[in-house]
Length: 30
Figure 1 (cartoon, rainbow, N blue to C red):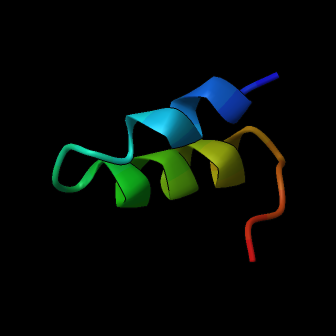
Figure 2: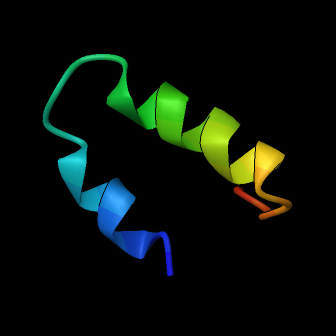
Figure 3: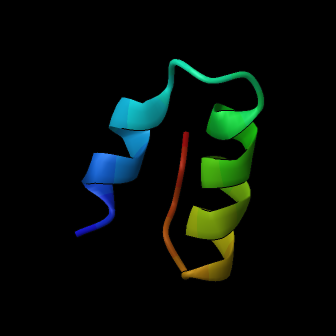
């Protein structure tokens, strides 16, 4: 569902932003 966000890993800080987004969206990121 939000997996496409993981593909924008190229830009700096995106990965951390995605992590926070997934945590707020009740997802588990390991």
